[in-house]
Amino acid sequence: MDPAQESPENPFGMDTDCQNCTDLCDARTNVVHGYGDAGAEFLFVGGRPGPGADRTGIPFTGDEAGRRLQRILGELGFSNSSPDAERPELDNAYLTYLTRCRHPDRGPTDEEITTCDPYLTADLRMINPEIIVPVGTTALRGVAVEHTTRDPETLDAAESHATTIRGRGFELVPMRALDEQTDAETEAFIEHLAESVLGRDYRQTKGRSGAHD
Image (cartoon, rainbow, N blue to C red; front, side):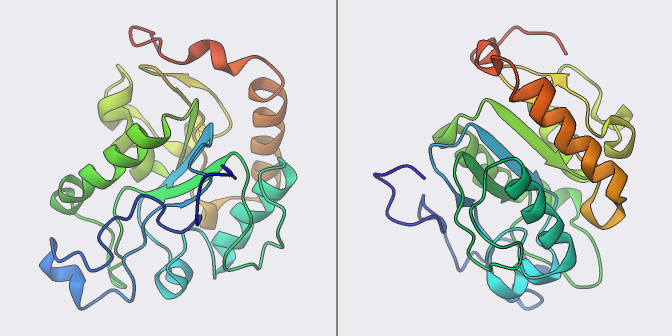
């Protein structure tokens, strides 16, 4: 973690009592802002908090889907903690969401994604990662709107899982939704990121604002 960083939890001091989406204020337990290494080169972004993250307040923790991602982070050398840790010790990885509140009965609406976008935009500007890992189709399409030349509606995380998409200044490495992944798909993602991304000079893509996907 960046040695100048005081805490991995919500390091940019975003509003933890956000009232922007009326339908979510009473439904959520926590507003789940970003967590991890503020100097990270890898940013993992989901569509919305899972039930575990809603309880703990920490992205991708507290439930089986979160444990799967934490195992992936450990395998790739981004985490020094148990997959069960509710406040994992992360290095070179930052975890966040398109939308910061969970409704237990439905996914985020387009309006909620738009309303929450300034939080994600702030995360991206502050961290300026080299690689973005959208977790699930909602996250992939949400990130693609601003950061690729692709039509977001044509993108599907299951189809793009464990591949690389060239974007504007970033590379995207999509991941299938954690609760839909098989163990074989998890291993395929780890192998792709380890060999095709970590195994080369991915930094050459940074700042290439005119890059094609």
